[in-house]
Image 1 (cartoon, rainbow over the protein chains, first blue to last red):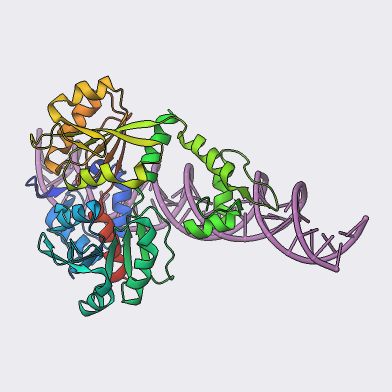
Image 2: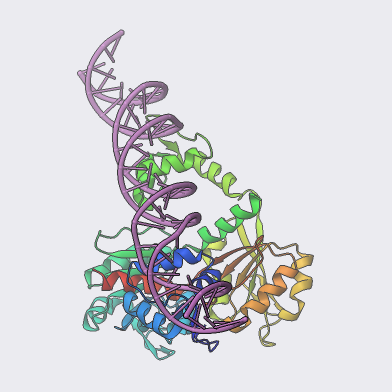
Length: 185
Length: 185
DNA sequence: ATAATATTGTGTTTTTTTTCACAATAATTG
DNA sequence: CAATTATTGTGAAAAAAAACACAATATTAT
């Protein structure tokens, strides 16, 4: 909405775009504070800033991508990551052809140096874009190096200690959800 | 577990891997039928087959990818899609350099032929891997051509009629969720 | 054959999430 | 300035999801 040049909006409009009810928008926001004006709605710029504060976007999170195959490369070039709080600063791969190269100003390091580089740069977030077979091993090494949160694209279930947050992006499961929908009306 | 050579497993073990309680595994399965044996658990092969039936994997869903950039290419080569029910059979792009090429046995067509090809092949599922600016336009054309379900990678909210199912993969939002976790202990 | 163990399926309870309902507030119209 | 309209924030109600508790059943051990 900000990009559309708008100044303010109602919870109803937010809900319309997020496909949820206005009342849920307000309830959810209310657990963090009061950001709107009765009868007028929310100032878009202000609300965005408040949400960024809530999420923790004021601090910039530096991220490592492990695995520079097709998916890893796509992530390095993903425009959504350019302007936001989360910046990919390091990539790792085991392929000598790739090591040393730079993609979109992100240097690709040898996966053997993963512990050293993660620790040196004090990274806390890692993205797993390796083949499934290597994912668990990479995760173990990342955690040993101080990584606290993971985004996993490998279609396997990874085991991590309780204090490590892991979010799985299981594309096959998502497509299966669509197939389920089509099969059942 | 099947790949590990195992024959049967308990709901507790499934829950452990999916990070949910055993009781939830059983409750969820129970809405579709009784697949286990008291005291013995589930036959892995049998349970897998039953779940595939539930999801609708017996029929093979042919899928189109729109946008053959880095992400689109990664999807065409994604190993998770090879062995499963969902097979990518067509890709579209507007770049003359790409049109006519074949990636992993998937032919890339001119985006201008999208309506014709989707209809001719009777496709029902589409994956949006275009730049954000073009996503809504592409979606409109897909729906006009008979597409009923969409997986959207463009970081924009797309509007579709009520009878069309759309699942958004918002990578930025996922990273923000990790940032939120790290900020709040 | 009996006891001990493992584990399912499900009715009930608890917890969480979502929705409703409405008083309060701000702006606009007549 | 009173009435009307738009819209928030929130307590209460309703709905949905998750967890509990346990009878039933299958296997293994003694």
